[in-house]
Image 1 (cartoon, rainbow, N blue to C red):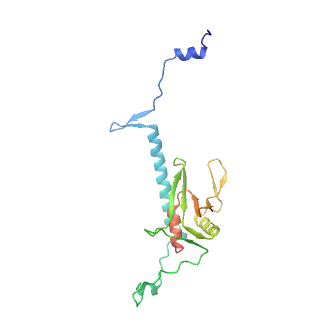
Image 2 (image 1 turned 135 degrees about the vertical axis):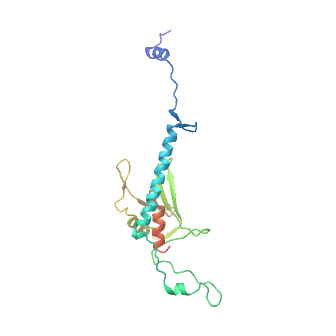
Length: 187
């Protein structure tokens, strides 16, 4: 039989220390772990990013909604003399269209988080027409012409097109800005 190694003897003779999460009792008696603190910081960072997007949408004059309504649309009623409804105002003359959702007639702009909440993206759905032109206009409106730099220092596009699903994907949570831009364009 072989004698035990020095590493094994050292492990046997050392006092056993159990791995415990560092906790701190809060004022109401509950324990707050380091993981709880991390989640609170992440949630606060997400709130700050969303608020920043809303502020950019409100302050940017390019996203200002059109407030001038032609007088002939205001003075005339929506019903024709024969009792039928008039068609809505014609869509803008652009090479692409954004179709609103059916139940609530909302713009199909969705904020998502992937990778355990570390990757924030905004997805624009229900698109038709020239998606390259839409990508170019959206990139210019959001100020992402130069692209972005990720954490590794690599240059990445801020706006990309998924040609299979016909979705536009924007890095970061930019839903309020995109909605304001789309409404200002007449969608």
